[in-house]
Amino acid sequence: MFEVGKELFLKKYAHVDSGEIFMKEGIARKIEEAGLKAIQFRRQGFHCSESVFLAINDTLKITDPSMVKIATGFHGGGGTRRKEAGIDFNACLEEIASGRDRRPPEEFPLLQIGHLCGALASSIICIGFLHGRGAPTDDLTCIDELCFELQTRFLEKFGEKECRPLRKKWVPLSLNHTCEYVYKGGAELAVELILSAGEIVPECGA
Image 1 (cartoon, rainbow, N blue to C red):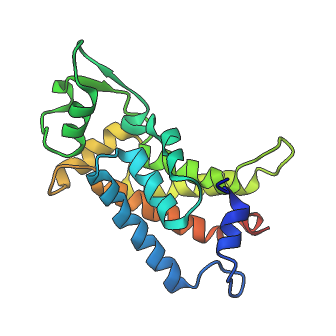
Image 2: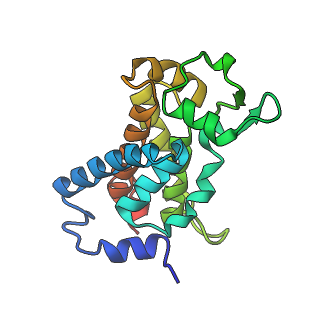
């Protein structure tokens, strides 16, 4: 059985110094690793929510990698619909995500919801694996404060939190016409927050 959650995470990183999971140098290495992995997973064909989930999980070994499926539906801001029958979903989405299809969004053969960024959504999922509740009497302070802080930092870094305006802002600035900057930065923010959770929210270290 694959162990999941906060207990396993703390067990794996039990070599703490002065109450920190890693020294600052170790945290910096993990942050960089997560960002690079997010781009690697994207280039393997995974989308935003999947790439960032896999990058965070592969860096911190939170849960079984097959759990990526719980993040899949958040790509494209939470749903995509064909504009006409016979559209190859995978092929069309890969053309868009890879930057090869550079048409304006209104000309895509697919319509995306474009709400909460998948990179942000999957980061929240990963935080939930570590600090979410198992019973209604469990304290919400850690998970809620961390997710609030994550969203605040994400907005400060990227200027937006929703898929559609993020793509409008960042894709044209990308050399390969993709959201890879957001994938990379989103994974980095999440790992930094997770590894510093006890400093940000004391209840997370309890």
